Amino acid sequence: MTELNREIMEVEAQGSDFGELYIDVRYKEKRVLSDGQVMFLPDIEATHIHFKEWQTRKRSAQRLIDYLKEKNKPLNILEIGCGNGWLSSKLLTIKNSRVTGLDINEPEIMQAKRVFQKDNLEFICGSFESRMFLNERFDVILFAASIQYFPSVKSILESAFLCLNKNGEVHIMDTNFYPPNEVADAAKRTEEYYEMLGYPEMAAHYFHHAINDLQPFNYKILFNPKRLINKISKKDPFYWVVVKH
Image (tube, rainbow, N blue to C red; front, side):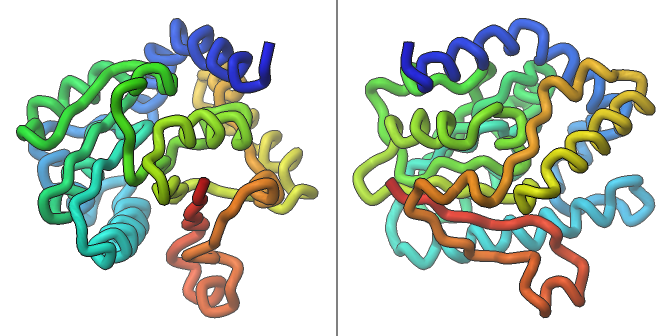
């Protein structure tokens, strides 16, 4: 069995129980929003518990959209782990583009369909498998705050490449990458957090990836939180990485 096939089987196996667990945790964290709130994301009331996080995601989303608009062509985009669909919807500002949002989280996928569904925007409930898109190729595949739910960066990128057009790109954003010597400590903090939250089993579905995991690939860091100017501002803690096949 190849590593890629093993990755697909692992994702399918975890999908059977991960979806319900994940949405329960999101409710506990107060991340599930009303239709009215989702409609205006990433803008949200300043009193919301996650207001600062949404400000961070607003900035990263705008950087991505500006970058993709500079390509000056329609794009076929797949967002893996789209949640309630707000970012998939924002990507439609790229003229004549088509966006597919995929997530295992059924309640929020249904919400995305209610709030955002358009002719050039489709939402699918399910775990990512390259064979889902045998007859379709994408110019951009996006992991925004989602690649931490896949055990292996190498395997998920190789799977994503199977769905890319020639000269296509995979973008990873709104997720931590760690120095190799910090991965174990980060995993321990996550275990403690989910234990405190009352969902210790969630830690088994959350993976901490080292920045070195990208070394086998043709990648470029488009936003580096470790740059001095970004460390001083402390506003945006996440890497933004583009990977080309």
